[in-house]
Image (cartoon, rainbow, N blue to C red):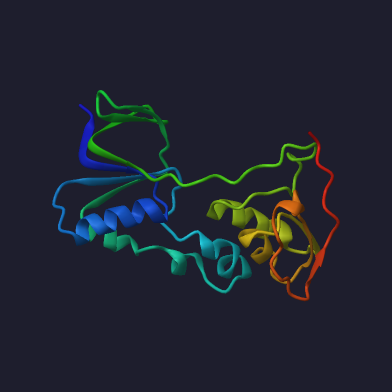
Length: 196
């Protein structure tokens, strides 16, 4: 027999967590399950490239709510589990561990994924994206002892993510957007040649 919940929320990031929180705030009394592919409790992503990366906040301070919160509100956390299929006619989701979870209502809140480089060298050691805590932890391990960092993209995450290193910002398709004012520790490198 499969587990069933009145509401299954796929995605344990900010959107999915807030959906569960608001349901309880509005006195929804049915069962709620929050499924996330990371093993960590739900946490806020913006501080990953800022305070967490800079060592200004420990991971526990960027949690959306403490562990006790979820249990006190009868929100079941199914962490470290990835949804691999949705079966809408059967009202269930299939998980990567071979189990299935039934639902009355499904909320899809998985968020976005960073766009990865497609050029030669994209798979080399030291080339990273920032999406999850594990990404930042890997970057921190590799930054130890590094004095120079190159950031591809001068957007919100890119311009916040180097904290103290000598940084070169390379903006792909720079003519399509303006680069925000950069502080003194930034140098703007020539735009990269684009390969079609």
